[in-house]
Amino acid sequence: MKSIKRLITISLLNFVVIMSLTITFDTIIRKRENTQSLQNNEVQTGSEDPIVGSVDTSQTSVKTPDCLVKIDSDLYDVGPLKSTHSGGDIFQCNTDMTTIFYNQHDKRLKDTQMAQYLFSQ
Image (cartoon, rainbow, N blue to C red; front, side, top):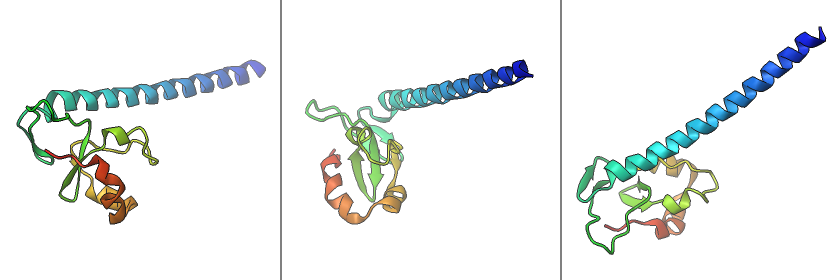
């Protein structure tokens, strides 16, 4: 009976370890895919994205955005905010996040703290 309990315990521990590794690898892969997608497709000179629109990065003084999101009619490069945001990395690059933003924040935050992330083309 003890050997059966020990076997069940070991099996459960193995299952937990495997699930943890699977979740970790899945997260790493998704982050890598998002980064590659942004580098390869979304922000090329004169590229046209249905949400972000055309971004001209041909001038050397223009910083290539890390992660563009749209709130109202404004574009924000939230790349630097991804690692420090109190709600975690919830950003969906190259999408309109207006609804998600206003579900958690008010317009004052957009007009004050978000101003530093405003992306000008």
